Length: 202
Image (cartoon, rainbow, N blue to C red):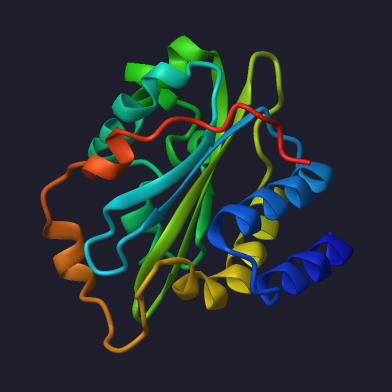
């Protein structure tokens, strides 16, 4: 995994645009940490509202509903991970083996055959720049604690470059975590109207 982190570090400093960077990172992750599907939106750093989602899921028409339900689901929610000691957490671990505690799992993921989700947030004192969910489906094994620790290190490498992903963004003032948690749970119109990325990362 150390070699993979070296590759991630190089990608983080490569100056790639947000689409190319996410594609390259997903390709690297897929060689290190097996997953079957993913959802990776960027975020408005102050409101944490998702935008420009990149996704490959087995039920692509459910993407807008999935993102809406993510706002309503407490287990492994990205705003909670912002305040956690680790920026990465699996659904099975967060729910102690009861994924039905998640509205997103009950409403969409269960029907897509999801076994476990590893969620990671890319955030710093200036705000939340993105979040990523990696899915394992069918008979796949649950994500391990070591895999969550690896994704926490990936988040640390990438977060420094995430601010440049958003047009016109800058790290000028810290984000209020209380404000982020208290804003209405909704999906931005840009996220609702976006399609999915059907191709596997390469």
